[in-house]
Length: 350
Image 1 (cartoon, rainbow, N blue to C red):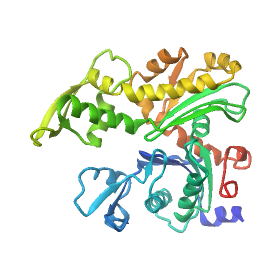
Image 2: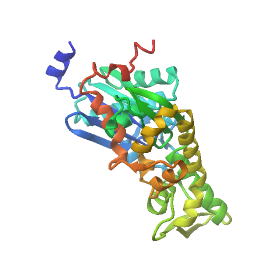
Image 3: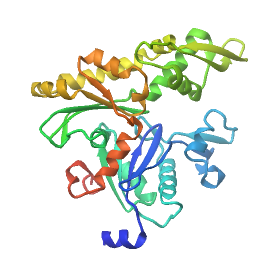
């Protein structure tokens, strides 16, 4: 029956990296199909998506902090888990339909990555939302496993390898071997916390209130985890905390590095905890294999030096860190029976 569905519905099974900040959709044949913010713009009090369903993803993201009183731009996922079931369903329905070029009757099988630390109830919520959004069958995989497969680490071999996935809402740290996690740590310290730290720093240090989009721009433009050869500056605009009037300010990369120190130390604590819990035999593997960092946070300049200095292990940033988890979910689709031990579905959670 499953073969008939694929043969006659022209369905393309999909891998989904359902993230707090961004959602990526991939297929095993075409690679990354979509990469858009996990944001939905709705009319307040109704959860009705504005603009006939177009207030999702990129368009909704541009509305953050700028909506009129009757509209709000919502992130339905918090800390890597669903905070609003109805809006998450609308988000997934939009992405599934867009990935299949508007063919709403197509019902694909999907593999969705989830944080390793979420509960059974939260996992079931992801499956239910995806099924209501139009998926025929839903499988879940922990983000570290998807990331490890996406960057082609030897996760099925008797050799330990370590992956750190710094997303928007959570950081996933895992040492993988023989097809499973040896040790794993999931913490709710990630990219969003970096943005919040910049907002707080600018407010406390310069009496200037900036929004989350400006903070993210600052992070991406002049943020770093390690001293830069050429330090940078950026002019930003916000609202003066004292007279409540618009004002501009020039920030430099040294002070933004100071602002990012607290969330970075939170991430490193998770990495060190994971290493401390690992069996001694894993140590020799990691001295050779090192640590691979993926996710949006991996784009922070100097992060590899910061991690290597903190752990004493070699550290590498994947060449395409933003898409690593999504690429991994698509690889599971190549042979769902072969990878069954990595995946869970609604029956496993019953």
